[in-house]
Image 1 (cartoon, rainbow, N blue to C red):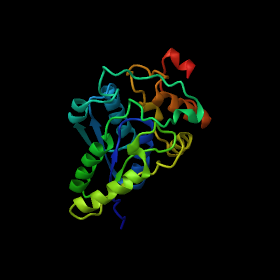
Image 2 (spheres, helix red, strand yellow):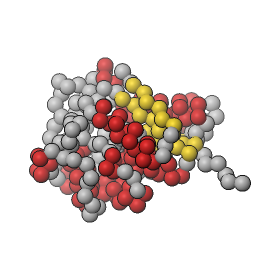
Image 3 (cartoon, rainbow, N blue to C red):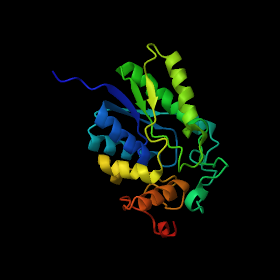
Image 4 (cartoon, helix red, strand yellow):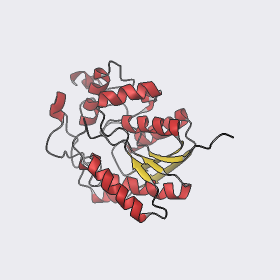
Length: 234
């Protein structure tokens, strides 16, 4: 008798990291994917990436949720068009500054995790995957290991059985390592979208694009998504 795979929920934004996380979840579990739109500039493009990645990985159960709170609250360049998306002029480790950038969405991951954990309870899933990365990130406070350790205690105390675990398999990896892992897994990088500002072709100069371009370069691989001409400067 074949043992049935355990259920897991994966938060899938449509970006590079969440795509690798989804590939891991789909490999090891009966995976379901959730996507949260929150009024970000590239939400339509990210939504398309979500559906395409699910199709490629064979993830059938999907939940699409719209969060109105984060855009109403504002305070981030991703949700407030009155705040410009800055170009990244950093190279190497300089991109990891001590200041939290304006692209940080205040306490966003708590909103996303709450949706995923609620759905995991309904599905009987025991794991929630999120592609948080501490290394090579833009310095977001909700991408630190301590944050997820604390959130797991909240989940343990605030759910019926207390058995759901938030897992962060990429959190200690460098971006180039994530690219290499994704290539090994066959993660569909060609379907992903990471740019903060554009939906036609990636700008190549925001923090997210610069981190991504550098990761593929360091991994010795070509990034398969289209970039605008100014990507030559990155």
